[in-house]
Length: 203
Length: 228
Image (cartoon, rainbow over all chains, first blue to last red):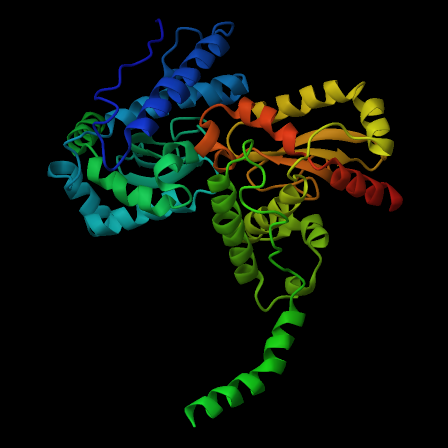
């Protein structure tokens, strides 16, 4: 397969005032694009060229570091853009809401756990809500551009919601106030997409 | 009466305040120049947030994490030498506190130029030339993936080498593969440059050379080699 640099599913300013247009533009057209370009260059001369990102992640420890870093950067950002919407926010419903309530007690308790994972990740990284092989949910964080699909992950699972906590994701608007960025993020979460991802895993 | 009472409380508090000061070795040092002193290379807003928010938070979190322990009286270099035995809150915040203080000292307004004396000789001996050293140091800064630092380090053999560390680790820490005495450093966390340079870390590194305080680096080098 050929690797594609995905379209941003909305305009740069669509997530204002929660995520500002300048951050979105640089984040997508510079950071994400660079990960894509460097991933394509890094995978080209390996036997995994053409494999899906999921297949690559499942044996990423055997591949060059550039594949891990830039492949992660490519996949994570794509999932992140799709996890947000100008009409986002609110609370999940249906089977996902049931699973969250069953596992964490309430949506608020889940949010608190996710917020902790995002706020306490030291340095660059991501916070995740994922579905484990036994179909249970898990909240974790990963360093740099790692993710729960990677064989090196200590919380192996399929991510359905990701939050970028690299400083480049929030510094222009929130500077050192990462918790404020995390609070703002909940206003743009696209629960319909997260729900659809969840359903496709547990079906 | 109220006022007298206030003075009384203030007076009897003095010895306690002094005692508290003596109990810890660790101080939050003033920034050695004004926030806007490194303009246009490093902007005022970045300096203010970097020093007053990020650096201060590392210091406060570090002192909170070691409160009431022997570490309050332990020199930083000694703490770093066995950092693997400490929890992440101490490793991360101790590094963040110490690294930034060194970083501020590595810069000054009207800095830049080239090193001279013994430092210049050592750089030329280890890297061929000052320009080649700059190139290798900048490369290490660009290549550090995610948050971290770049260092010029004096190794156990007295020779210089360049290293980069993740997050707030540094070359004193026993978690590092290649350890030594750092004499020069550059912060490549995005918070160090994002307001002015955004994704262009390489431009930030180019600008940095204009504010390097080579006299400070020379002093660090001299004191590290004098210990040998």
